Image (cartoon, rainbow, N blue to C red; front, side):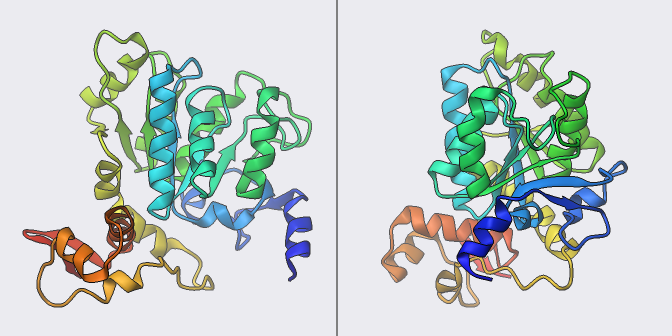
Length: 296
């Protein structure tokens, strides 16, 4: 198919049912998967390994900056960022992924033809070109309050884990976190000061057992086994995923090697080596051991 044909196909909504090869395998396994999905953009993005980034609509400037930075680091590690297209943390996460040249998925609580909030129409258009919009609601469905909790279970269902960046105790993001736990996903939260009211929902999640996130590596360390399970659940007809880090894998032998030695051996920037290491670790090709990393 030509590039023009691909572009025209992406501009038309697709309807995907649980029996279709394009239906995301992780979502198919939850206890109440959508009977169908309406997708606008690259439908294959739904089946790639994803991490959800969610949080308050009334996010602080610091929260939005952290969401964008985390999204950029996750896409650099080869993951797709999933969120809900809302104001605040959601929008910052989508923009962070797009600005880093990555892919991002927006799960909508409306029909595929109704962008909410309206101010995010330009963001939705950019996202459609580098990922996709997806919803279970039919065309023309307005943003009704009861639809948002149902939307949230799809966000967590598509994802290997959910990162709550900033949330008050009554935030809808905690519904997403609860859905993630019910679906067997990892839940992460950022550690805010108790003096910040907008972060108390995150502190509540941490008290309840969520994994604390200070750097993106905290997320990647936990997701290794889930990432491998995702690959096992993928349709057998799918071609093997290339993580683009074979150049680094070739430098490993039987013994452990540290990051400094890898940087010297390949003569590449530290940041590029760390991104490649994260991709290899997520793919199950290398693992952390005393003294650095070793080939699995």
